[in-house]
Length: 271
Image (cartoon, rainbow, N blue to C red):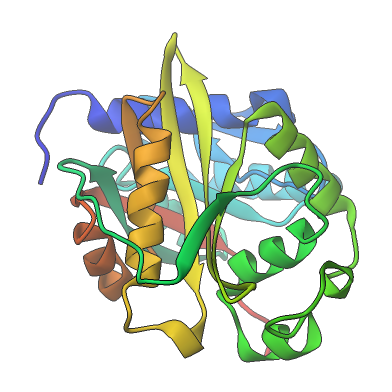
């Protein structure tokens, strides 16, 4: 695990800076609550350096999110704010912890023969489709209903408010989207989001998804490797939150190392 001082501080500073271009940040006790478009919401977070958060602050933050039509969500670095899990549970939220990793010793992996990698432009007509594949991890029903493999660009998912925000973010460089294509079909999609933090760029890899039909060939890992290489052209710190331990081990193959854990609190799923 990396031990370079200040890494967790910088992750917290990134999280505090990331919403500033899209939302106004309202302080609620020890938490900061970004209030912006429901099409691109940000979770409430403890102010950088905060160690203790109470349940009342979580309840007030959630009430503000409800009032603004935003999802109830709080995120934090577990090692930095260890009290928040109990506070969130006391406020009625469900808490989950995910592996937090940082690029330590990047590894270059080659794409399989016949697979090509592209940066996705803001005007790409397939952007809504790539976005949907990224957000649903190539769920089978999305591949069929959204746009079957090999579909023409006009088969992409319909434009919506979230896609409009993503187009603007891609155009301004605040989100970078990559797609791996084989025989004209997307077989993996990934993205990272660079933010200036005190004059130095930090970027978060926000997802890499690969087609279930192409898994086992290393396409996802190779795309993650390329995404990291692209991010490191300008960022001196690249990190991510993995979906589970198995996913974290895939990222370890491309040079990520465990740094800690990300806590996520939201409402229980309806029964």
